[in-house]
Image (cartoon, rainbow, N blue to C red; front, top):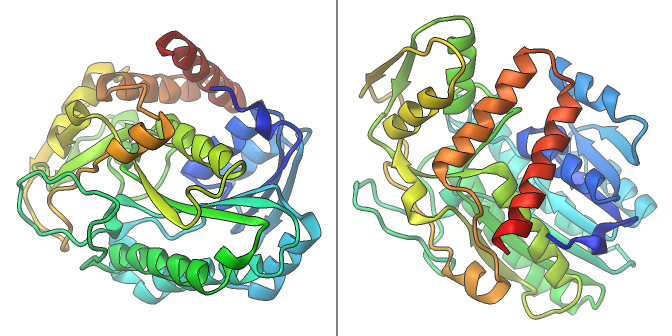
Length: 358
């Protein structure tokens, strides 16, 4: 995990207070980067974390990326060396309740960032983070490993917004950005990300945590649905490696990469919950039900052959290790261990894991 190229570099992260955004922020701070973070007004948990890292090299801007004028101004004033675009409305169930907000944030927000890049003068490597749900897939249970060249689509509002994000990114690349010598840009599509510090509503791991901490039984929807589960640090490792590559070469400019788990970590929701129970530090009851609340893709799996072959990337943790690390994170958090220390300790563990497996 030799990412010395990020030391003392200015890195702009949209969505830096979200689940993945905080992990990316902490990882880059551990590498010595100067962070420019853009996100919505933080909640109480995010405030607590940000308060503890105010002494670090970080600038926080709290506003909606729908505000193009403000976004462009911050981009131009800070002249970042790298940009990671994570800001999004990330919940499928919420996209059904508020599709316009989802499209406004995920599609127009991305368009605002891409438009701002047209005015950037400094050399910059940009990673546009979308999702495995950007692909057009059928609702059958047969596992198909989706490749980067497969058709984009999405029946639910969230998935459609992510497919649209990919399309608008490609449009800007071919229309404007490939002509700019200072810009290198790619998109990334990760699997179902898990890890500590996720407090989102209607996501399986935080749902388990919130119920089990209160000794409540969790009712799980769609237990037979299959997903490519992976730890957040495995995905971030891929994002950083790709950013490092494109900062040095135009070879992958305008491209897209999948970062998913190995085949043995593609499991049903039920299997995920049952494995997580093995590592949980207290009572954990689950009731599985096949009640369909809204339409979701039944089976998702990503082909990671391209990332392995062209980037030399591969996931370092299987599902059991990922869930063990996740349970440890929450156990320490509820024992009142300093939350920033928990982040940095697990990042250090991951770096050591990379050295061992290398």
